[in-house]
Image (cartoon, one colour):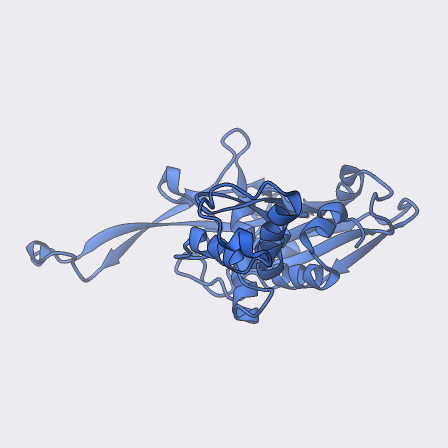
Length: 290
């Protein structure tokens, strides 16, 4: 596998792309600049959900971090399937075996079976210890191109929660949306870590597929159908593991700008996307997916 740097561009219309529980579920925002933020964890969650839906927990594509998963129970599978019977009999599983190869087999079992572990990594040093994995794929926080406007909407509910509230005509609630914004995230694929976790070329293709379809199966009341769209995935692929240029020098070649600042943006066509592919360093190829 070779090194890759990428820029992921998506937009939001009349939806909440990533609510902040510490701020009453308001869309996340940089308080100093007003730019909208979407966490890396949010995007990774969408990748996990897509892989889970499309691969249906098939061998090698199980998802480690998912709803109601008991992590120590999953770790126990690695111990129970260890090829060395002495390890399987070990009573204290909070400590890894002293022998490096025996300990590595526990970690590799988790990497082989769980797509998100060999992609994003995981800390598995809990009561049932399977070590730690540093993932080859890292994604930054997404940041909006322009400062965002957050709208607060009052909503009503005709039903009540308790019998004592039956006399009330309705109950009130709040909903938050962003009228429109374009977000950019940056990412990196480390081939050296990929070799350690077993992250393959096919896994990489699945990652691209998941990012491009991340919002197709993520609809909710906060993000209704069509409100969030993956617009572009721009990949800078190197012809070697070390690469031919620093990441920032390539990622800065992707520029998204508002066409007319006198008019509020409400569509992706209100922005201009430019990928400066002139004078690319030798050994770097740029590909625009979608």
